[in-house]
Amino acid sequence: MTVARETEVTLAVGQQKDLPAVPPQAGGAPDREMHAIVEIGVSSHGGAGPATGHAPGSGPALAEVLIVDTSRSMLHPPAKLRAAKDATVAAVRMLPEGTAFAVLSGRFDATLVHPGPGSPVPAVAGPAEREAAERAVRILDADGGTAIGTWLDLARRLLREQPAPVKHVLLLTDGRNEHDHRAAMSLETALDACEGRFVCDAWGIGDDWDAELLLRITRRLHGRAGAVREEAELPAVYEELISGLLGTAVPELRIRLTPTPGTVVRRVTQVVPSEQELPAVTAGAGGRGAEYVTRAWGDEVRHFQVVLAADPTGREIGEDLQLAAVDVVVPDLGRPVRLPAPQPILVRWTDNPLDASRQHPGVRRHELYQRASAAVAEAYRAWLRGPDGRAAANRALARALALAAELGDTQLLGALRRIEDGPGTDRVRAGLKDVDWQHLILSSAMTTPPEPAPAQAPSAAPPGTGAAPPPGAAAPAPAGADALAECPDCKWLGPADSVYCGGDCGRLLRGPSA
Figure (cartoon, rainbow, N blue to C red):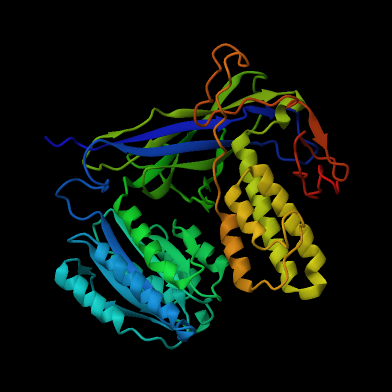
């Protein structure tokens, strides 16, 4: 007997509910912003084999377009083009029977390598089509320039009529979008046309790719940006990516926000595992409020920051009031899906400035990541100035290292130490290449959730608190958490354990140079 595979979706809201009810200064807006962290998890149970995200017998779950940069620079060194061919072939071989797929060659324009120029639809995976695609990939040569907008637009047209619930593009480039002005479609126009149509992962290879370009593409198209340090690593990376796509548990998940009267949704941003702004769409099936679309979920947990605005005028002080309801909407997958109950986002208006100054740990963590990423960008810009920017680059690197340590992010710390001139020096290492910085910029864009609080020994824990808090709940406040730190420059008030000022000046508050 076959056991039906069941998918479970979990939802938790973490927030610090207190907001100041004190009237603003003259001319200021009366609204206050509530920042909440919404934690959503997807997990699959039972059944055999990977989750496929579609109903049995309803067709393949995936439609795939593989884009290979074949600009002239891919021949310098030739190992780049060889690795790109090997990786593309490895990906094609993994596609299940019946999967719609295409391979594109990208230069000044985009050429359909397989199923062949002029074909209006992708090929359908099977032994003959996979072998034909491999032959076509093996004879690829490189010439011309780079105009990525045209590559993405051809992928969009090929995927437009595909019924597969997961439409995915895997893009590889070794350079920068230097010939956008010569292209039939600019990158920005292409991103506008492609947004919401498919998910795109973008990868860099070689020594001259642009991290900001990859992030710009993947943030708009809800994918992942990455790069390999050695060309030979690429086939294994492609196999891992395709395997993850074939294990998709939920092709699309929507976060539905229904605000109460007087509440405005300012923005919804994915903050773990990377930052992505989510545009609002009208709630389906006559629902009130708005929905925010996310795609291609495996068994994983993601965090989202929800920012709501509300006016405290005339509201009760010290009472929990609902600002909005959060719900999760999943399309019919043709198999059991357990959805969570809606959760409220609350506010408690207070006239106590100490209560109003506290932040939820998840909100603060996201702010620390934003500062760390900004510090990396600042260090890179200073490094580009040569000897004149060395001191500024060192200061920005020291700030990024301190923030990564405060976050406890070992991956980011490791990436930062790759460019540091020895442990603890806080100086940029001599002899760096630009590609070293590009890898660091990608690393600083990846985020992690906080480590779960360890269970306390029964003798040290109050009754009933021996376990870690549930997902999304605020961690217990450390000793002295009610104390505040004041920045001597801009007078910002914040938690006493702040390393840097959270105001405009960004001054170091703790440490040897504070």
